[in-house]
Length: 84
Image 1 (cartoon, one colour):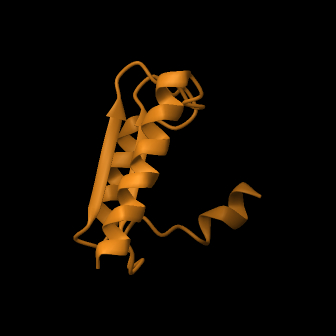
Image 2: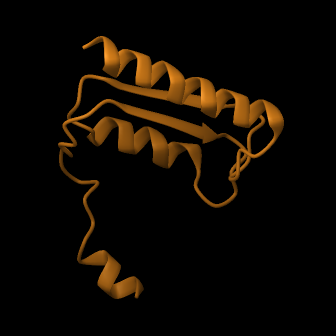
Image 3: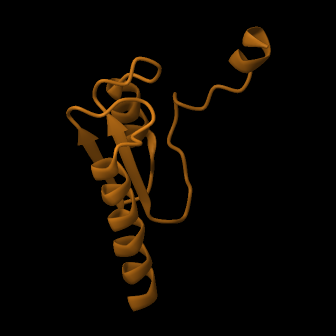
């Protein structure tokens, strides 16, 4: 699986997704370091990319305040898309 995954690496070149991107990343995530999210942001060719680092957030971002932040982000993005 790991060897096969290496054949499909995409982070070395611009990534075109053709939509707004919102990333919420816990800084205390032991599984996906926040630096990986920053690298992904640098690869996204879109202008409309926002990353939110949650300083005390973990991998799941499942605390009530995390869920509230996630829902607010979805609502804001939906409003932004509807306005276009």
